[in-house]
Length: 114
Length: 111
Image (cartoon, rainbow over all chains, first blue to last red; front, side, top):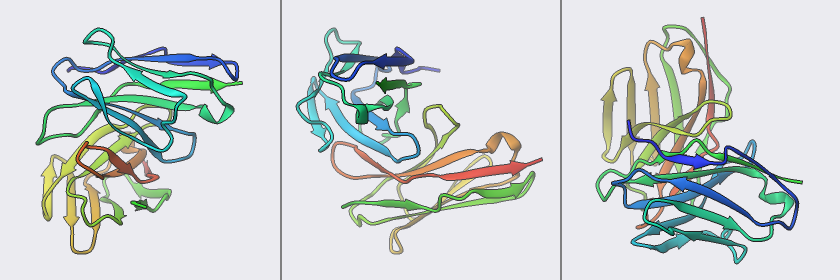
């Protein structure tokens, strides 16, 4: 069964450092997403990406966040200057074209900012 | 503020029983709803999707949607210990397929 692949599985970083979270979506999927889940809290939408551009972003997705699809397969989330409150599980997801957009999630990256 | 609400539980059922999980949503414009299962420390896994009023069955799972009452439910028949997990309800919140999530209901199936 096709998978969404995320790396790394765990990342520990110092406050103020930049991190890049990587994702390889399912190859025939067209919509890509980043969500995060702080421990014990709801899954929160960060950003959606379609046709090589951001289609929607949340209030959380401020200037310290950016996304790229640099080579047609990878999909990255960059956090420029991490804060303690960025500690969370970050999930990449992808979905097919219209009609069935239940997501397939990657296994997640646990980001710990110290 | 668009919200999806779930009873956090824990819901405890004996093995073989029916587990009933419920969810309400605030946005009348939401059209599509999803149930995901999440094991501790893992990513959500899609169980069911439902788009129309009524019931949708898939194996041991039945999703129910009532748009007039803004209510979604998931029934799990013949519950197994492996069904023990947190069940997340999500509804769509716009044209870009963004989903709004509930906090999840923790289900424990006791052997």
